[in-house]
Image (cartoon, rainbow over all chains, first blue to last red; front, side, top):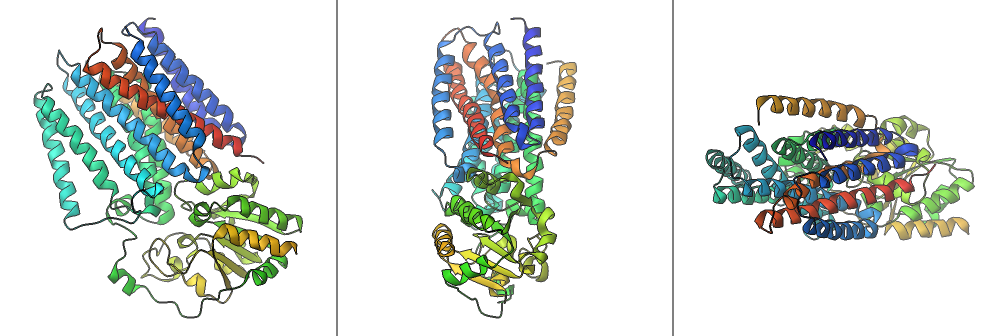
Length: 459
Length: 94
């Protein structure tokens, strides 16, 4: 197949990817979009296999079979609650693939590179490498393999700075002599190290931002590989993915009213004596209630807004939530869901879980669409959410989350909070909401609490 | 690589960034997770580079081994990404 035809097929693939994203603008067309995108990928792979440069197929077929088996296995097995770490892991695979392609190019170097090619090759190696290990760290934190709390130590920033400088210095050596295998390996090793060290100080609840950012990096790495290989399909697709990752990163940061630099470097959520001291201890008492009392409140409600958080995912309570909501709906209660942009561990995490539990997407409302309705609502049911409903974000300038847009749940007539224990939220701060006069706490595992509530209502 | 190719490449890069941002801003929050896994799947396009690295050498050597690993990882990315996206999108019902 001639290179011109191949390039035209690449253009077709890039067009199908864009149409695929366009169809994601509505749940009705999204599935079709995903299929079109798959067809684009298939066409691009087919065209590449027909390229005159390809002489042997044994390793290619072997690699594709192994990759397909592993990819399909993990995609079918993964639980919906584990989707954030799944996306992290896949990001890591993409980053590693870009870095390896860059490495193979260096290995095959016989005639030397132009400076631009060399620059983009180095960037694909560095960005791909740190995306790989950074994603593995994010995976390990989300999966609970390592503590999700921020890990900090003395001189952390200085050490990271030195590694960055060392990477730049080694890159300069490669720039001078592109056959310097030792320097190339050094660049790769330092990039891998940087990925680990950059994610260690970031806490579990900030993972949505990191997953988005790594998504952007994996796209950027692909673009750089595309420049190095003069491959248009890689350049265009990589920039699409990069734009998507950056867009989502910005949404996440805005939803927390924090800058990206603050997320990356402040080790937010670290238990810090001085921060705890500036936070006001709320006055009033926290009122723990029994299941029967809470059931009575729900039975007498005319309207209900459910606010899910990471606790719902952790307790796998999405199905129990929907069962309770369905029962109340049948009794004539108007039921809606309010979704905060950073609820859960990745953008749209709550929406996917509720979709899995067969909740209609008509019932899910974004924060800005429902925030004015809390005042006219009888009951709000908070399931495993904490910082996103903390009124201190609006009232207490000393609070670490002051300025973050939050759901105005306290304006409802009654707020029921399902909470596992008395522990403070991720940000390590007290939540005044739990002490308010119109708040009723129901302690225990969210799923079993919801099941008990439903049983009590049916009695 | 001549300057002309570089400029064409950069032009495509910049235009695709803006086109991507425009398209993505239309995706509703409810589909943000499938958007991530779907764009994740297409970043597996790095597989094209992996295929060229693996299939190009006449004989089995260090390049084809590195390429082989890259093919496996990129395929996991592509297949896994599309499949989880499909699984999620199937669940979204009215």
